[in-house]
Length: 189
Image (cartoon, rainbow, N blue to C red; front, side, top):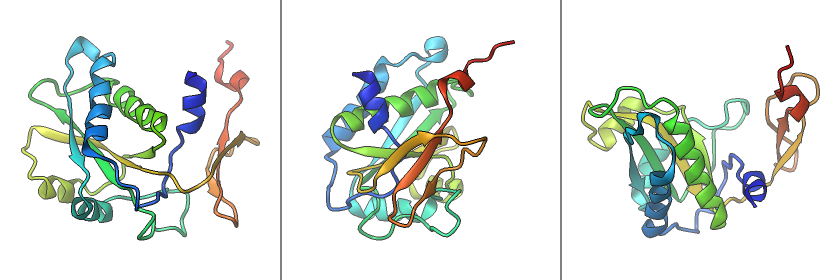
């Protein structure tokens, strides 16, 4: 069921780095995006598949992880992603992809979860360094980096208490994610 996939689809930030994701699997997840709705049907998003260990090692230091966890610099060696999909906007097609970026990123993560993997959509990255690393031409704009791998952390959803929506980790390393109630999501004028 869709709800089961959504409940498993958390922002995982620690992975078992020994589990590698085959390039064919990553390509299949990118292929799922072909079936997403697309603003104006422009289909202007493209992906760089990063799967080799040395490429993953080059991408990793250019990412920021979990802004609310001030005392955590990100996953340690052995806990880092096994792959990345770098989402690009081809500005030769359109200069604004409207909502395609989020639709496609979620679709990729749902595909990953269905196969027992997980991931995290990252917007905080060193743009210039990644552009240089992949020799990107001016017309290709990096939108997101999607980190992927076999999750090795427990993520717990819980009801939000008050208005504090910040995620946090407990002493055992369990990642807690407060969620608003359905009633609070419905606006009643």
